[in-house]
Amino acid sequence: MTQAVVDLSAKALNRYLVHELAPVLGPQFQRYGRRALVRMRGSVVQYLVLSASRTRVLVVSPGLFVCGADPNFPVLGGALSHRFVRKNNWNFVDPKLDEGLTNRIVTMLQADCGPLSFFSGMTDDLIGKEIKYFIHRGNFWSYHLHMAFFNITRGDRAAGDDLTRAVGAFKALPLPDPPRDHDRALLRRFATLEARLDQPDCVALCRADAEEHARRLRLPPIRWPSEWPTVTLPRRSS
Image (cartoon, rainbow, N blue to C red; front, side, top):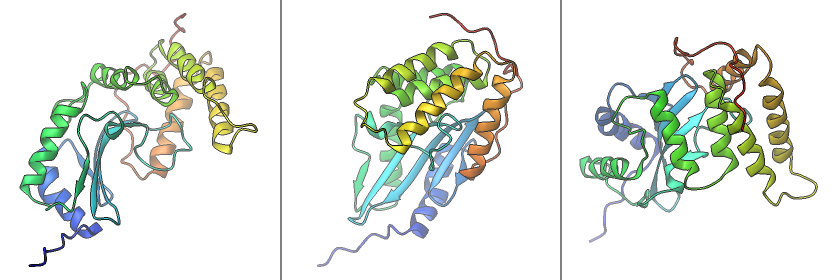
């Protein structure tokens, strides 16, 4: 008997997202496009994205993203994805889009993800710990850049040290000569952020970057927590 082919079309994934995953994650998450759920605090986005390959593999991507950190990044996700530090395999071969799959995903979210659970509140402390969770698993420039930008937009004086670590980790890479366009853009971004750190409008400028990046990605409008300072705090020495 021929096995029935599971429908992994965009329409089917959207239906599964709305009727199975969204109710489990709760009202704090909202739909983003047809195949993703997101929730936000300031420019920080916690996301769960579904996609399907041509080989009938469902790819589940949970993670964290800081709008504006790298404003040239064209899609949501990638930098702080649990797929890259996973304990489990987030690829599901020819799965049935049903309650059983949802239970597997929930179990993996609870086991694999860091301090910022998908099932708890989204606080500054947990966001910081979540980014450090990634940093402890790899000294990647993108992890430090996300931490630096998160701290800049909330006026945290630790941002200077975070940015120094991001630049150091990036420059330690064996970059091609001449650098690629993306490498040059990142070097310009680092220079821009370093120059802003001592400017009184640093927070405002970086928040504007984040808001524009969120608009380009068609994310919900950023709402800045009222308790976050709107001025640059003195830089903390290393």
